Amino acid sequence: MTYERSSERERIRRVVRLIMSALIAFLLTGVAVAEEKTPRRLMVPSDEALAIMIKTVLIAYNDANLTGNYTVLRDLASPSFRESNSSASLAEIFKDMRQKKIDIAPIVLFQPKLVQKPRIDEDGDLILEGFFDTRPERVEFFLVYRAAGGLWQLFALRVTTKRVEDAIAVPSAGTPLPQAKPATQESTLEKPKQKTTKGGN
Image 1 (cartoon, rainbow, N blue to C red):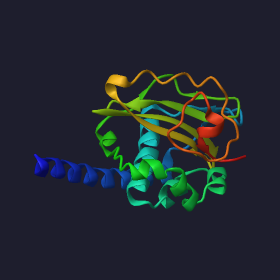
Image 2: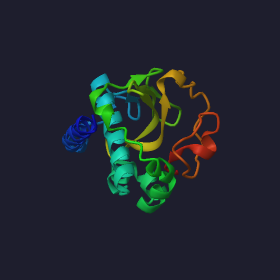
Image 3: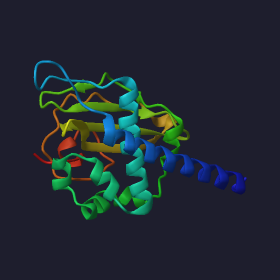
C-alpha cells in the first residue's frame, strides 16, 4: 500500500512538472486579454483558457509551498503584486500551508468548478471563485487577475482545503476587495481586508 501510494504521488509529480512547463509556456505566448473595439472593455477568456489560468497559478503555488521557493509564483503575477510581495515575504505569508505539507498536486487530474460566473469588477479585474472536487479534501480558490502587458496576470489569491463532508459552496464575494497588505492564504471571505494576499495599487 505504501509503495503504491508513493508510486502514485511520483506519477502525479511528473505530470505536474510536465503540465507546469506547458502551462507557463502557453501563458507566456498567449492567454491574451481579449479586447473589444472600444478600448479598455475587456472580455472574460474562454472556459479552456480560464482552466489553464487557474491551474497554472495553483500548480505554481503548490510547487512553491513544497519547495519553499516562491520565485515562479511571483514571476507569474502582475507588476503590482510583485511590487507588494517579495519571494521572502510570500514564504512567510504561506508558512502555515508549507509547514502542514499540504500537497494539492492532484488538481491536475480534475477540472475547476466555478461557484459563480467569472466576472470583471468595477476595477477591471477578473474574479474567479470555485473549487477542485478532489478527495478526501477539496481545494477551494479565490483568484483575482489584472490586465497587464496584454495578459491576465495574478493580482490576488486565496487557497484553502476543506474536507468534502464539511465543504459548502464558497460564499459570494460581494464585498469589493480592498487594497490590503499581504496576509495568510487560509482566509475567509468575510474579512478580505486582513486575509487576502494581493498586489497593491
